[in-house]
Length: 394
Image (cartoon, rainbow, N blue to C red; front, side, top):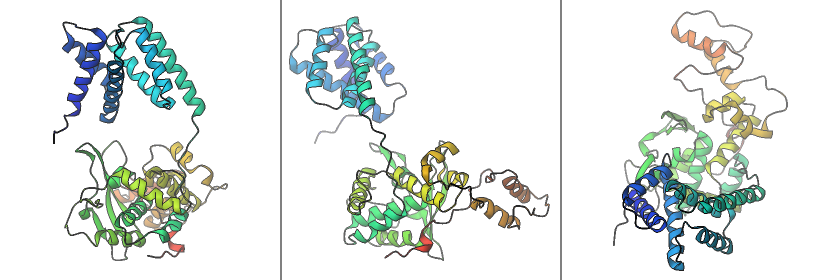
């Protein structure tokens, strides 16, 4: 079976093919091709570059199959290609993406036919206006504890992929982590974010667990997510039939790290049966649901921000939305934890002065109206908003 060539080789061939058709036989085709690749793909991710390669190939395939005498960058060819795209019943976003790639490529090689520039830019602007009109504000339907609890009785314990899906869902809910922190993220065979391994999971004496996960921040860091006994029970079901001593925490049926897309499809079907999801969900829906559950339980926005590693308090306020209690809460879970550590349960009662470094850090955490944790330390884990008061069949 022939091996697929690398992405840079495929991109080079696609750009060389397009430059040769648009410019004809030029003496410095290699230099023009490399300049076009640098101009179009600069600062783009591998996924975007793969999309650009696909769009250019489809454009050139149409031109070659049509057998047109004029070059693909000419005004007449561009107009006919626009008519072909409109007649193909493609969605506006796909056509706008194709036109954007054509504009970038033709601009990089100097617009062989300047008249085509105005036609392409006008058509792309028209499709962007149409996209804004058709676009509906689709926000993820929050997946909170009520939705998860309604889904648990529908799981067939004999089907491993369903058990894995619920275990991942519970880990995401408990940790407020993103999908790539739990399932990893790869570009081809290269892992951009490694998935957690079995050795990163620790069981505590009270039945809970700790899972070492990557923080969703630019600076790479790790934190220990607190897992409830319910989550540990589902993880035990996943790991009970594993024979390997170590490896990715969640494996597919073929023994490889479970793909993020497979989890989304599986858990969406389970939540759809429970009436909790009407489309394919992502990990963001779980993060939003957990944040709103914490807000309803009385946690402050700053405590939720620290627990979920959001960049700003405005982001948390947007995520929580209407779940914020109408009256300000008098208790701050993180502030109360710091006060208890300092020896005072009442903010009005100041703890005795102590000049030691640990005491100075505690006073720093309590000095402002909104407490923050000392630099380099993670805030105490927020109590689970619902586990303590509900019964779950496990």
